[in-house]
Amino acid sequence: MAATVAANRGRTTGVGFDLQGALDIQQALTRLDDRLPWLQERAIQTLARRLPVEARRDIQAEYNLPAARIRDNLRCAVVGGSTARAAGVRLVGQWKRGIGLLNFSGRQVRKGVSYSVYRGSRQLEEGAFIARMLGGNPQAVERYGDRVQMKAGRYRGQKRQRVEVLYRSTVAQMLAQGRRPERLLDYARSVLRNEMSRLLASYDY
Image (tube, rainbow, N blue to C red; front, side):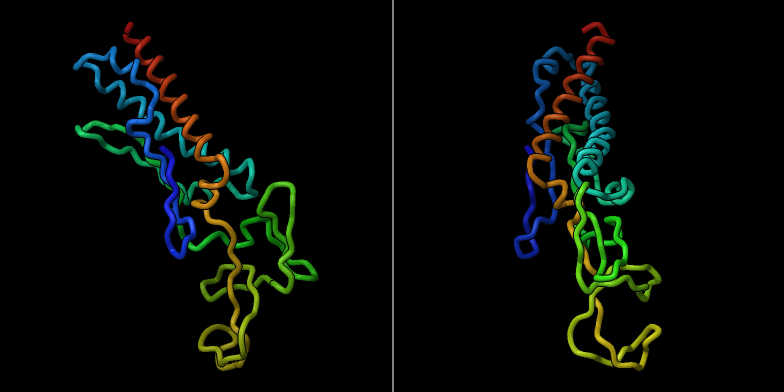
């Protein structure tokens, strides 16, 4: 089962893949006796290693984002069932603040900041500019509101407009995009089916 989690004013805050009871390996499991239940656990642990890699590749095929940035926001966990043994895998895209424009190959141009969220296309955020924030990190920002007296930074004591960091999609939203949940669920079933077949063959089942 693939499910999205909606919260925070209706925005997608995460997506989970709960494979308990949805794995097409029952025929193989009926061939196991009480001495070999750990074969299923080994197959699930293999899936837990491979699923985040496949999710990252699938996201990168659409989004222009570094692999490390995606990995930092993906969490994959082995979940238990009615016994102490592993029963499934849950992959979740974490909801943070969104990903800043500079991560999408952002660069300063005459009219604003140019960036590329999707591979093969670029957009322009007119009036935006790149500034170094109080923490020292550069960000694509835009000015807003009235001029107020700054309380920190290089303009402390001066009256200036506030700036707002520009963000785009989160990895949670990317993970839930389109048919990606269904593709990853199909991939998970395939990995488990093949891994169970391999393990059974290695023990002459």
